[in-house]
Image 1 (cartoon, one colour):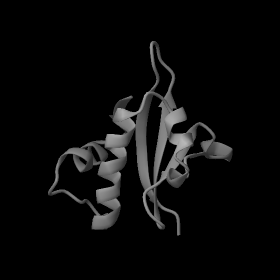
Image 2: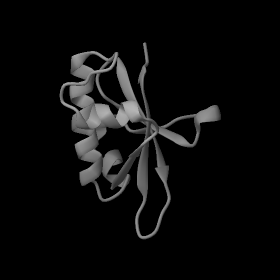
Image 3: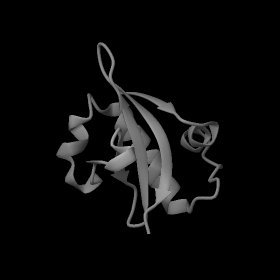
Length: 98
């Protein structure tokens, strides 16, 4: 899938191995792994098949977003953008869920 980023920090985090922003090292390591996984996916159905990702649709004001587990504390929030011939993913944020 095509991947875009909501801001420059998230994009740099995905590409610059020495950059960690304010996030803990283990969460950033998983983030980079998830970006690779997203790029390799055919579409979002691949994420639902992998139960360990805990890929789920958010509710309320954020019902247009999905989240994916990075580790026990951090989650990756994204938006699926419909497109032809295939969908793309906008990486919206990394959030502390605890």
